[in-house]
Figure (cartoon, rainbow, N blue to C red):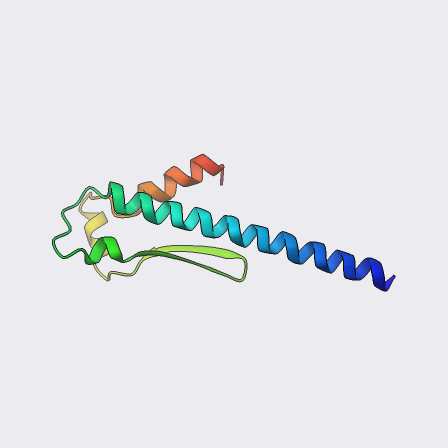
Length: 93
């Protein structure tokens, strides 16, 4: 029984690593799309540089760390939202 359990644990860890690699690829894609397609004038470059993601505990967090990003989006500009939606549709998330 111990051999089967070790094989299961090894397979589970391989699957977990594959999921995290996929999350990293998705995060990179969202950030690249947001940087390229943001429809606002970024005078300092800070808003575009603040698009980021992280993968922790097998979960993907996508965010913009600029404290004013939500205010820019509230004014009708696209900082990050459409890039997230685009990738969600692409990967059927």
